[in-house]
Amino acid sequence: MPHIVAKNIEVPQLPLNRGEFEYLWVAKALNGDEQLVGVRYKDLRFLLKIKPKEGRYVIKGDKITRPAPTYILKEALKNFCEAARCEVLYDNLSTIKPSHVQKAREFLKDIDYFIHQFPKHKEVWIEVGFGSGRHLLYQAKTHPDILFVGIEVHKPSIEQLLGQIALQKLDNILVLDYDARLFMEFVPSNIVGKIFVHFPVPWDKKPHRRVISKAFLTEAKRVLKPGGVLELRTDSKNYFDYALEIFLDEPKAKMEVTKNIEPPISSKYEDRWVRLGKDIYDIRFENLESSEELVLDMDFSFKGGTQKETLIKLMGQTKVYDDYFVHFHKLYEIDEKRYLMELSFGSFDRPEHKYLLMQEDTIEYFPKPPVPSKANKKAHIKIEEALHA
Ligand SMILES: C[S@@+](CC[C@H](N)C(=O)[O-])C[C@H]1O[C@@H](n2cnc3c(N)ncnc32)[C@H](O)[C@@H]1O
Image (cartoon, rainbow, N blue to C red; front, side):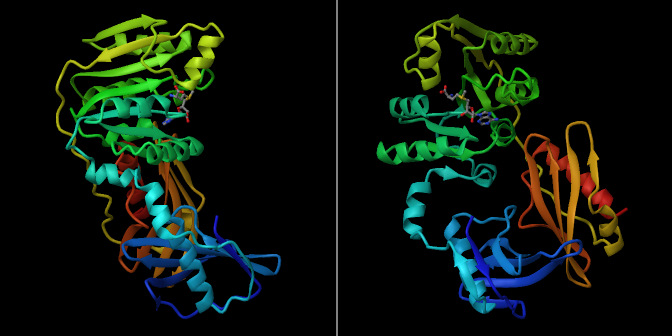
């Protein structure tokens, strides 16, 4: 994480414009000694954190609002420290040229891209948890007219795949660092030809973390076009039985089950299991019906403002509901009329971490509204109720 360690810092009068950066305000923790500086850069908003530590100050980007690519944060830190006359003792801000960053990351998209501009010009095939990427790269080379979306949560695998995409000059793979189970909620209906779930983590002790579930199947059926296929491949008999039961629970279903059939390309995992003499199971679940169009409810606005006393009462409170939660963390004060509150909410598997910015009679999510997932919508209603209590 880029940061600066300084002996002294004099926070300048804000707001302050410096080059392309606008430093908006400074918010002081009510229970604690850190300060947050609001920054605007083009259409991005984020926070810098100033934390006193052993007679020095550590100035870094705030994790929740961290902008991408990293060079923006490095420039914002450098620029702010110049304005704040920091006596710098140490920094790790050597800048990578934006053009390099841009090139390597061209195929890495964030979840907002898929929510607002999901590419629909081509048939889409999705691979969940691509790992080494061997299968995804093979499929993308074999089917140049298909647009592939690879989803992973393991960052080294993502880096490795991005390198291979550039090396092999492929232009039909988009990569997303996100939980595939939530991603499915944002995929338009009837546009996907195949969904590959190959060797998912069995999670025998924590089955709620499995990729395949009743909810996942419901979304898979919605996004698959009629005739589209969800393909599960696993070495775990336990996972196979579990998934088959979910698939058979559907009122109408068509599927093909095979065992130890050689695939066109085998993954690293598969090679290992085959070497160990394990059986490999496949289920190909075919979608039979066309689904209604997806409509995402994007309204995360608040009606009216709130009171400081309400915010103080909410600090540290957690509210847990069936399949979502809301937790109010720290409160920061900008001035008598403006506050910033850190909170997390939504699904237990993929919680949202945000701030609420309260100015005069308005409340908004900072730096931007949450993703329009079902869990976030439900949590938003509870947050609004709590703020207006
Ligand atoms: C056992 S590996 C299999 C990798 C690859 N499919 C193969 O066959 O070699 C499972 C992969 O799924 C990823 N994964 C697990 N849960 C995930 C989720 N909810 N969303 C996206 N990826 C996930 C893991 O990071 C891991 O790379």
